[in-house]
Amino acid sequence: MHATLQPAGSLAREAESDHVPETIDDMLELELALLRRGLDQRLAGSERCTCCNRTPLVGEHVYVYESGTIACELCREGRQEQPIGSRTVHGPEFGHTMRLTDRRAA
Ligand SMILES: [Zn+2]
Image 1: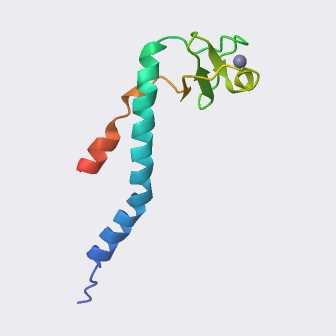
Image 2: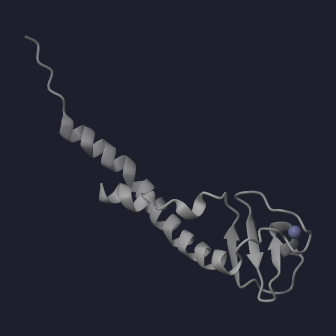
């Protein structure tokens, strides 16, 4: 009988080390998500640059000004005013991706 011992321990370690950078990304992503959510509530429904009237692409940054102006990356360049915040334009599913906490618990 030819028994093959599987080094389960080393496999598990490899899997864990694979997750280390991912976990750090998740933590950063979570912080950003919380920041974005605060702005999302303020800006609910408005996902359009008020300067050029363009709808920013998903993944593009938009900058928010105290006056209520939302500037896309291109329009921000020409503004004197300092933005009170920025956020990344995201798809409709973004706000519900809380599975990273589930992953760390499991
Ligand atoms: Zn613009």
